[in-house]
Each structure stands twice: as structure tokens, then as C-alpha cells.
Length: 91
View: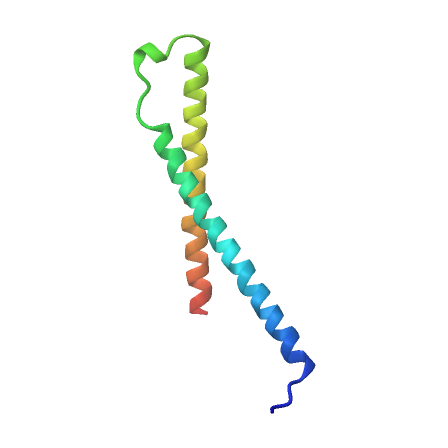
């Protein structure tokens, strides 16, 4: 029977927790990237002329513009984040 130090057990727990947090972060990143793509798709193309009139039309245009903005911002964030991670891995 091998003798194990007390630090071995706590190191294993620490490593497991670190891997769990990394997995949660990765899944969160995937969900947010998926959401930003869906927002850009929801913004879609031009609004039909019949939907441009009135307060409801204005709200739809504002919502689509906001969705497009947030989707583009999310895409830019993750593209840049991936570049930074790749740069760090080269070091």
C-alpha cells in the first residue's frame, strides 16, 4: 500500500473544481456565441413598407436594430477573444 500525502487529496479536488469551472465557462461562451448569431438572424433584412408606419413599426425597427447591434457586438467579442487566446497559447 502506498503512502499518500494529505496534499494529494486536496490537489485532486482543486484540479477537479478548476476543470469544472473551465467547462462551465466554455459552455457559457458557446451559449452566448449561439445567442449572438441568433440575434443577428432575428434582425434579418429590411422591414417591409407596411410595417414601417406607426408606433408599432417604430418599436419593431428599434428592436431589430438593437438585436443586430448586440449580435454584431457578441460576434466581435468572441472573434477577438479567440485571437487573444491563440496569441497567449503561442507564448
